[in-house]
Length: 265
Image 1: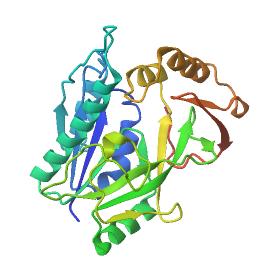
Image 2: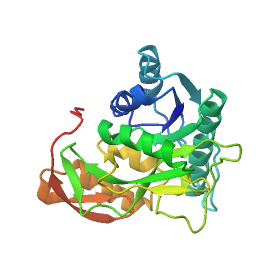
Image 3: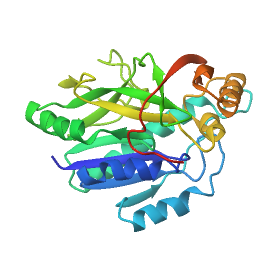
């Protein structure tokens, strides 16, 4: 396996060093596709200096600046569909760059997604020996602290490895074998769906210095009032009994676990 990994990022750069260090030992090529302007027209002046330092440290092989295309609704607001299309395009750009650098297997990730090394090493061998086209894994999601885990488990999956073929392309699919972010879809082909005991992703989706930026610039955001409620709950969170409110008005309970990757923000 010659593994290429691409990260999409606009904000949340405080989590990116943990993600890069987590998988750098396994990646033959790492690219970060970044935006100075979000899918909704906002700016992040802190991102590029962070990325340049990480590249200097050898954690990134290539940086690619993506300029988002804005689509507007009848009210004159940026349409959420433009965010979805931009995310798909960024994942496609990452794929093309990894293909051009000789990679035969691809991962598309965000800045807050990590893996257990022992599980990851086993899955690399299993994917290669099984001759699969695609693979998917469950996830564990964390809120506010790296020790606060959502319970019960979410019924979402994340893509793990995609085999790079001539016709591999990111596009939304119907009747997909698992429930995943639609911006991360390629044709499933011969797919392997891993169990939690085999491998699962550790998703620090709600671990941020500034959750407001994430929520207001997410392609998954709902209406403005719901986004405001998510931010207020997060900013006022004090104990495990407060639970979690996610984008899309999803209420969750929390349980306390170990800080597996020693994450400190």
